[in-house]
Amino acid sequence: MKSFFKYVLATIVGFIIINILMLFVFFGFIGAVATMGDKTVEVKDNSILEITLNNTISDRTSTNPFDNLDFISMKPSQPLGLNNILKSIRHAANDSKIKGIYLNLTDIQSYFIPFATTEEIRNALLEFKESGKFIYSYTNLGYSQTAYYLATAADSIFVNPETPLMLMGLGSNLIFYKDLLDKIGVQAEIIKVGKYKSAVEPFTRREISEANREQISSYLNSLWGNILTGIAKERNISIDSLNWLANHLSYRTSQEEQEFGLYDGVCYEDEMLLRLKNKCNIPADKKLKLISLVDYGKTLTKHSSEKNKIAVIYASGEIGMNQSAKAIGPELANTIRQVRENKNVKAVVLRVNSPGGSALTSDIIWREVALTKATKPVIVSMGNVAASGGYYISCAADTILADPMTLTGSIGIFGQFFTGEKLIKDKLGLTSSTVKTNEHSDFGGAYPLPLPISNRPLTAYEKQVLQNYIENGYETFLNRVAEGRHMTRDEVHEVAQGRVWTGKQAVKVGLVDILGGLDDAIVIAAAKAGLEKYSLTEYPVEKNPFEELFSGLSASVKAKILQNELGEYYTTFYQLKDIMNSQQGLVSRIPYDITFN
Image (cartoon, rainbow, N blue to C red; front, top):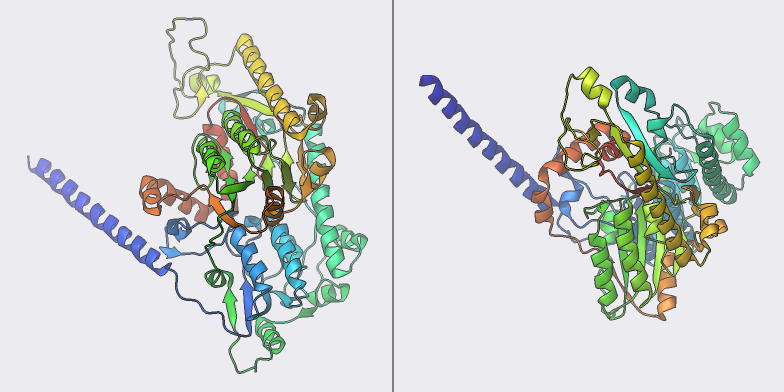
């Protein structure tokens, strides 16, 4: 009895402590949110817009304060979306108080900024230079290839004396799990359509297929060629010379690289700041007037009274069954329908940044895009990736724009199942009995483990049924593209088969109309709708942040912790987890996620 009361008391005390801790966490949230409140920002005369890119850049700036909260340190961060970055740069060009831009790339997180996003920011900077204002770029820790490509938009590039640049070209490394699966007694059963649909290769092969090697080599060379062309044009260095540097990898001092033409100056940070003061005619003993992108964005007009609107709909993330800021679900189809029925919306820009996912959800969204196209212009702007299901939801648009370094296409479908008969019986010692009413009542087997692993393989008949299902889905995909792109089914099949193309290549094969970014898509939408004056409205409408927080608090905390611990490897972990736990059915997804240094 004494032990009973002891355990009861301990439970009560534990419950009280947990609640007290949760209360502190809650007040921490409130305090963090309070620090994020809009403060009054004034742009002073003779100011410099400082651009730092040290956070993940999404297509759209989130207004949810908890999205930008570090759940470990309880400190808020203020990452900007591409939409607001472009808007700020564009506005600064005509702001008399802004004298120039300081591109501070010391803390750039290169793996968070894919090439297509980098390209759109770079193009905005090149356009800014047409105003006659200066752009200086500097890094204290060295330029990665991505950062240097961005820096070449500047008038002058400076670097710390002890930080060499390593131009190496682009490479891709694929990991294969076939031997691992064999060792643990798991077999991947794959049904697919498309010569190049290689998403399943890591589970069925020990090395890359020739078809996959061909497509990867093709788009890597396209990406690298675009980078070299951009650098060569702005730095007046030949492409052959840049390739020579990449092929003859060697340690070179910053001074030697300056002599080669890669830099305009080698200096320490204090010297860089002094250069900026001299540029603005500020005495050395006076403070430099720097304003961040975040603060500058707060000074811009956020609302417009124009009745005619262009709706920018963001489709970002994996395509599945649930809608969120980082995932696409059937709910996006409802959003498109609401926009179609809104008489004030005269045109639609669908911003797609998705590797694909569920073929069913993709088709549901495609239908709403097609219906909207019949009533008002629909322009697709492709971001870093708009492939497989991402291309599926794009193909019905009036006009498709992509960045030269967008990854798109991958028109194909596959289904994947994991069977673990050997793992379950031989290694874990688990057995099972099946009772069924019909021949295939146990189709797909049971799940004796907390993983989507079946206890029996598919029969030959079941595989054929699934193959027919996959091929029917592929034919539907081909016909959707053929209808939207005004091509024949065979013409689409020729460039489909799961093959990945860059945006530049996709224009040549007819999958994309024009090379350009989000701003270009908006201009085209306005022209097609016959609008000279209009306002922009963004969708989906963001949900109440407190509802979002408490509906998925544990998931958000866990994700933040994993991101902190895994860093650039978080995306790979998330992708594998998603593949293992995805619903078994038709999948239309690009074979991999790609990041570059």
